[in-house]
Length: 90
Ligand SMILES: [Zn+2]
Ligand SMILES: [Zn+2]
Image 1 (cartoon, helix red, strand yellow):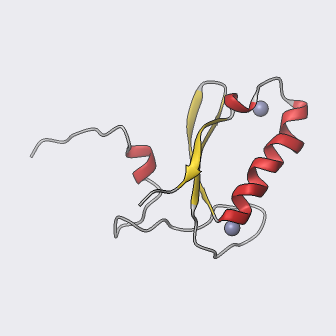
Image 2: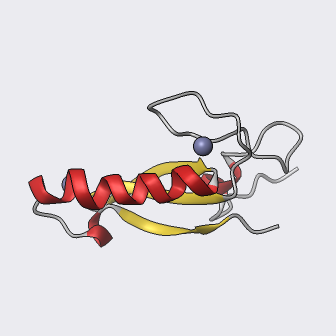
């Protein structure tokens, strides 16, 4: 059987072995058991390899933290940190 490389490998990485259920909210400041509804493809400079999934509340907090806490001390723009973001489809 041929092995195919899919462009969306990074995104499928956030799903568990059952294939279609995200593992959980990735908020790193507290344990969150809410089901994730949004994803962010995050990185720095030109490497984007961090796929993060968040519940709606922590998605908003993540973006706010990036803008209000990280951005003032960083020369990069928001687009240098987030390649893709939005609701998890399906
Ligand atoms: Zn959360
Ligand atoms: Zn930065």
